[in-house]
Image (cartoon, rainbow, N blue to C red; front, side, top):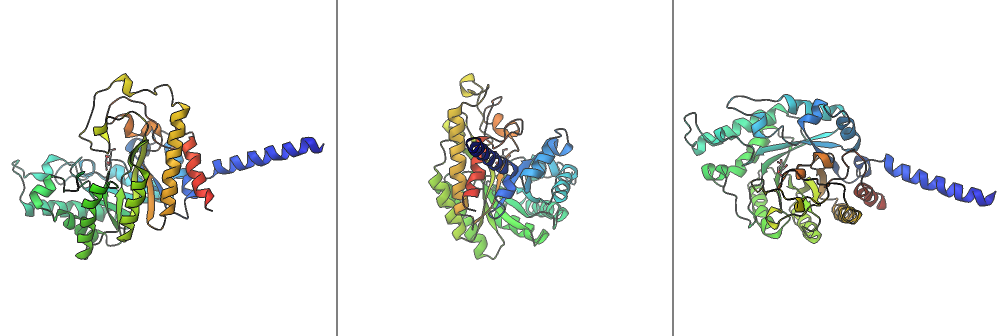
Length: 372
Ligand code: GLA
């Protein structure tokens, strides 16, 4: 009897403990450390994928609109604001007790050309563009006043070498366009957190360009609460020691640090595609799309180990880290299937195309459980 009972009890305990970890969620596992978010898109909010919204509400506790709050969507023509889909995202988040991140106010991309021109097609003056920026920020931030935890105020203003990116904002307004954007956002919702967001800003040269932006705002008494490191990462890059160090450096300036658009690409990547420079695109080749029929175990293990290592670092810095947002709900929704090379099958997230829990998911949960 005893002989049967002991293995039976052991099996029951193993079953219980494995069910236990499946029943937890990312949000719950990390609730004592930082928010866990996902990008959410218009298709999901429309209900076209009936599994999406319940799944999002169960696993995550914050959302970022993948596209619906970008200038081209929310303010497509002069004087025309389309809040409909973004409003549905905010309503969904509030119904489910989730935080909303506003993405994004001032960016060079997904911003229509008319923004920089008058009705005759002439480039705007500094004053006219500042007024247009002010009106946009006041209207959008004002519309969501009190309902958005924090805004990505300026996105991707810095080049890889740390210099300021030559955008229309910089060309027409000058370097202080960044200050003005933060001032306008703070006027429109004094309680919202305000962030500077970029990709590769964990890399030393780019970080050295972002630090003076933060210090300048702080020296002038202009509100900035945090830095978003987008986290469009790869199996072999960046070096995790760099991520570790950069979080420490931003944190030392009093910044909240967020990984705002996290994924780990597993596909071969020509080196010029590291980062998220969206004007970069390459041609499709079968050799660059090797896992159409599934991810080999060896790569699955690399992905799992990398996520575990990353979350160990984030947990170590949980005094500074306030949020980790995944850029997509599951692998099928990731932009990395279509960029920088169209038509590939990528596996960069924690959930598979059927909303199944990947080994990387279990590894991420385990890191939080280890320090309970
Ligand atoms: C950048 C932007 C995001 C998104 C990604 C690509 O990182 O901040 O809004 O467009 O590129 O999906």
